[in-house]
Image (cartoon, rainbow, N blue to C red; front, side, top):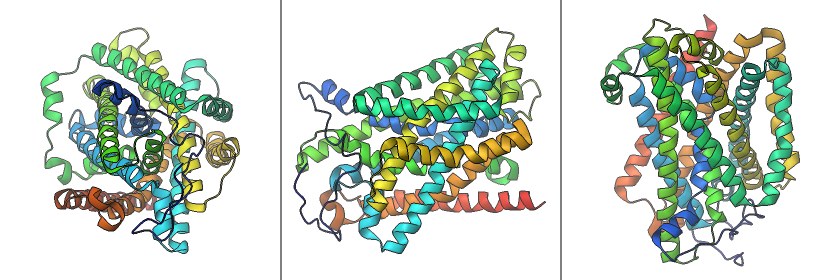
Length: 446
């Protein structure tokens, strides 16, 4: 680790890196362009997991079953926003040697930094809640395990995460990539047997003004945005790109920024495929047959096999859900550790940190599952996405601010065109999420 030196634009010398046990542990093989790309490949897939977690499933299923292929354009635009923001996140980490949480602590006053930390912890707990519920639903569908027991079983993944972290970062990345491939293969199978109308699918990727005029479409569209662009991923990405042993020179950092962007863009393309596939399968299977009210994962599972007439369609769907939930668990652990270390400079054992976040997610999930059953957990899943939407701007705005600052970033600062585009994206996200929160509040008051 380089010795601490004062950095322009920051109040303090460079901080101790987050995930210190993994910092600069992955060597870069420069014998060819492809070997270099493979050396940098990995962090993008850990980030992409957050864009295909169980929280996305409910909004994609609802959008496809109710409105057919119309909201595919929203998934595409959300993914393009994610590519931009994750690119900025990796650049911040590589250039400054700080993750986003550390940058916030080093730039803002202590009360502001603590406020951002609390909001981020709420977002991570909400994301963890979605993962808990998604995994529990999958266990219920596959093995008929009661939801309450399934929620408790998910606490055992603490040991899995702990084991993987001790075996090295590359192994963790490999496990995540295998699980992503599993989810992708499952939905490729679902796509093939659902036989969607390809012309309508293509038309669905073209934005229409009708989405803005129709309040119900807009509501689900904003839900898709809130479920797609995950705030904790911005903190996560800015840290894990520093696991690579790139040269700490301007050319070395420029190379690292370029390859990190390629890595995350390829990985997010997989996330785009999976989210689009969920919506397309819902449109081709449910919307086409008049089942327009399918919004819960359990309903989709029950209807897939009889409607498609293919044995095993529902089982494959549940397997994909289980892989998605477990994948999100791995990256949620890392994000929680990075945020706590970055904002508070407080270092806990990973298993202690994991138990704390799991407890925050499991307690409300168990209570709701006991009192209200399946319908209650489905509503809790939607609520978790609303909480994520609320926190999103508090991560996006500092990220755009820092990466546009020439004093902090030097020659890597966002050029004028990128700065303008990034601020437009930040303002669009903020405006749409405020609208979503207002509409959600009005729905609850009725």
